[in-house]
Image (cartoon, rainbow, N blue to C red; front, top):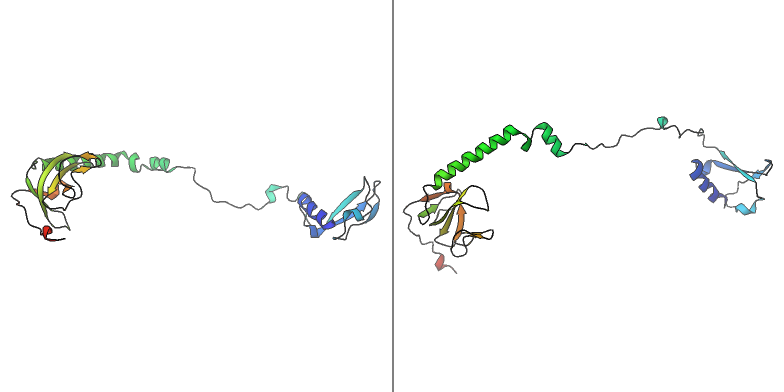
Length: 209
């Protein structure tokens, strides 16, 4: 079909099929006829070996118009920075790359650790205590552990509460620090622990079902 031929030529020459006319020429370059019936079969025309089909472009495009890339309108795409977050932080001296800030944080951590150490020196295993945390009721118990732990940095006080007000049985992260019943054990920071004469209190939990 002639229209199918035009569509194939469109891919080759770049002009729309609707803007192309086809003319048939003989082997000795003599005009025969126009191939102007879109529905006609190519074989229905007197085409012999060596004949030439001439294409006339009516689109108005100039030859080589799209070959010169300098005449093609450019579109700016979104550009992504080649910089990585790490190199940006390093260049801007942020986070771990800010030596002054890192030294300051280390000094603060050392000071906090020294303050906690001073507090735990006044707390001994076996002492009666009362845990006083902001926004929570005071809870009494016995000091079971004093020192550093593997689950979090700093000094911690392991307490066995008088009632099941804790979180575990003295074991955290697979490591046992002291022995107690489940839900009776807890770890708190030394600044929240007061030691002294704190007799057991009756919370009335045994009366509940």
